[in-house]
Amino acid sequence: KNYNGENAKLYLNISQPGSKDIREPISIDKNGIFKYTFSTYIPLDAMLLDKKTFANINFIYHPGDIIHIDFEAEEKPISLLKTIVFSGDGFQANNEITRFQILREQYNLGYGMIKQNDTYKMSMDSFVVEMSKAKEKQIALFNKFIIENNPTQEAKNWSLLYATETYYYFLD
Image 1 (cartoon, rainbow, N blue to C red):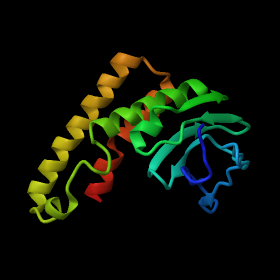
Image 2 (tube, rainbow, N blue to C red):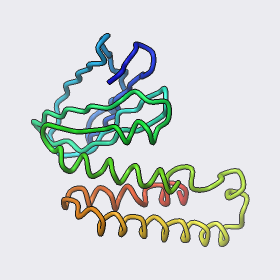
Image 3 (cartoon, rainbow, N blue to C red):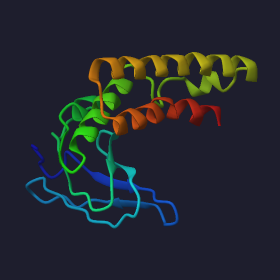
Image 4 (cartoon, one colour):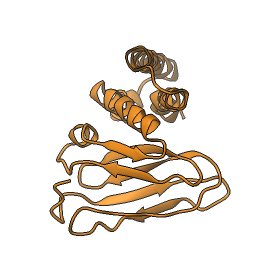
């Protein structure tokens, strides 16, 4: 919505076991409409990346799904995420995971949760303690989301993995 030819630049990121990762630019027509078709053999998640805001639009897909995503071209990632509405197959779970994604960003429990330059200089023991505190916050946010939203089981499973993704990334 409100696409002007320059306020959004989309890339699709898909990773399927046994195949090459897909990281392709998405062509958007003058009306802000885009379409991408691919084959899949198992349910997974994918991400549209808006290179203008660096907002990640995550979604779950299953073989044969047709997924529609409406969103407003915005200047800030959280603003963009708040405009997303999924329809088509899997719309309920995808709308729920978007709500969790917004929460994680609002509470800064994603990739910005630590100051890497400072935190990576800590001793290993101090770093593990710091990361454990971050994981506790991530799990608490996940629990808050579950209580307040009562999401589908698929959205619960995805959100728990997404909640702690950065914890494991930084520990690695």
